[in-house]
Length: 615
Image 1 (cartoon, rainbow, N blue to C red):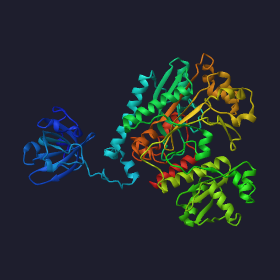
Image 2 (cartoon, rainbow, N blue to C red):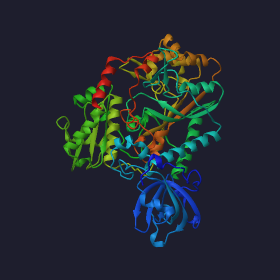
Image 3 (spheres, helix red, strand yellow):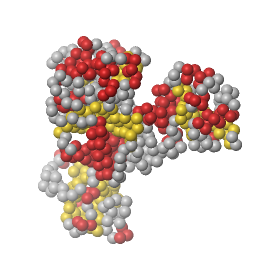
Image 4 (tube, rainbow, N blue to C red):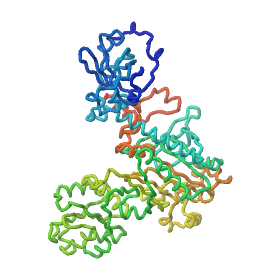
């Protein structure tokens, strides 16, 4: 049956006969009752005298039996996959031998008494249950992929988590407040997305990287406990767990300290895992930033497996090996990890591991391989005798049949390389227990870090983070020689190697905030231009306050057991920040640009011309 414009007519279903149940909610308790269902034809099986279809909606699938010879169900012979169908019928219990245990409605079926095709569908560009479809095709037809049980389950998981959060925070005395999307450009570590103003030519809004100053202003305004599910925007390079726009569970509290925030958020964490996974999380352990870096090479370590980093400084000191000696002399580190089964690795495998270390910034990788019976091989064998290789190998934690991987470099680079190696080996050697979730609070972060490229101190988190009480005077007195040792009242919540939440106690004194801006190299004029409104607000009775923001996308990604946040976002972007479905970003009319006082640069014009040629 092919509809044309002349065929459009009032529908009996929808307008007159209303849906009574969702497909996935039919069970034996409804046996003998008349129900009305509406959904999509998942599959169709023609047995001649009867037609069987699986009807699908967001709650699940149920089998429907239609008689094509009956005038009320004659549309059965015209049905195809993904047709939109309304069915009225009687719930029947299926015989024992006909039960389908693969679906939750498998004990029943619907004996249709009438049906109506509400709309037709062309053949889909891919099958919804095909796991081998290219992601680019799925993203182009995202509205179809969203019909799949996989994504429907994950999007609904997101909904469930957010409802749990909203309920918990409301019961805990928080008030939900929406903050502006069009706001002021304030440096927070990434590039802003800028929006030109038509009404005020030459000026720009910025899409918020976070509601940081706004939620602090709400504390100054006396709202005491605020939260929102905040949309945030950062113009930065993307990864599997990062998107240009994302959601945060954002909260701020007054008259509290670090322990209050950690206690409340642990309670929220336990609620989520109990309700979603049925797991009791218990008390979350803590680790200082320095310990996390020393043991795992990361401030968000995956503690589901070992391969902990070992310090080799005393073992290799004055070894005569120039590479090690030079690194130690300039204040760098020499550290290593042991690799189970590494004694069987080929030279090619070690070369691949070397490339991983180099990609993370290291200049190279030293490996020592156990050959059995106390013998070792290594590319540095000519610099160390077997006894010394054995000593270094043992210090790395190596045992017979294993290998040791060693990196010598400055602290940050060596940590990054060893962390990359550790994570790669954890996956490749299947050392990670993926049936468990491991949580960790990382605390005592550095307040500042020095940027060699910018030749100035930058904030480790953001410029509103408070130093620990005993370090505040160092900022106020401009004691730059001590900046590297300043600690922040900051804390990150880590799960399985992902930071799922991060926050801090904020600076609430005007003079300390001004000192922080000065420490970061901002001139008084720049400070007034960017943060004058905020510094003014700090003069009017600002309470001690702090907060935290959870990454919604990462949180739901972990709960769903996937490793890509695109799987838990309804309409995500690609790794190049493009929307393949809507073809965004896209060119706009030149008149629109003129209205906001913009003109494309020659580079932008060239890029557009190249894009047009490709298309």
